[in-house]
Length: 314
Ligand code: SER
Image (cartoon, rainbow, N blue to C red):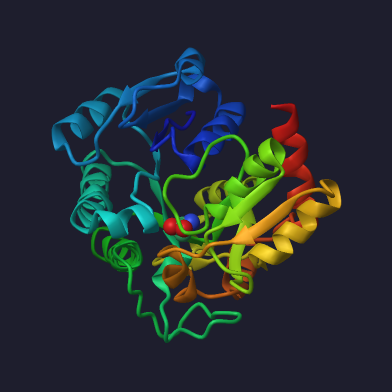
């Protein structure tokens, strides 16, 4: 029996890439895309699509009874910077949305659920370098608090109701197919668009702000790999640390300059600086490597070369 896969948040930054990869592997008709936004023309032409608000239980019931998904990727969330501007709505979307999807997954007998957590679960008292899987976690953003609470609920739903949830703490994600949606790490995507268009960029994070980052292809590969892994390999049922590479805005600009020698960057840190300062600069992902074989393919130079090539030909 082929799996029926449901991607919730398919039009977002991760969903766009994930949907393409999953449809290639499983066939378009077996991958149902849904999002609160109306579908893009392109996506609708390629397979089933439903408009879905994860806060509306009736809409969820309709989608679940129509498609009976066996695997769910629940990606709909409000990211760090946007949630700081809308704290109540951010909490509601991130938490109630999670409960609604988990409850429907149990009711409709979904086999496996993937849900992303984030480096935002860490806080100012977390060890900043090579942040371990288990350590002090004192997030001070609504997004981070909701992700940490969500992680605890992943483990709770697994223990209490046997829901097979798998989760990753995504670093900042960099891809060329879709724009990011209101995160603190968005500068690392915007910079490429501006570098190609205007030859310059003003960074909203200061030089020296090292953050854990990952190229989207690696993130999609990790997401599919953990979701498809045999259940006994998933020892951590909250969320796994996941690492690609780390850089600060200055290192990224220098790498871009190797390809675009006239590129210039200046700095104008805004309120996102405080968020970035509370997050780790690098991540220890030993557990993901030993439990289910995680191994990233991209480093900074490879990511930059790929981003510039892809965006210039787009
Ligand atoms: N990229 C996210 C953000 O910046 C972190 O998970 O909000």
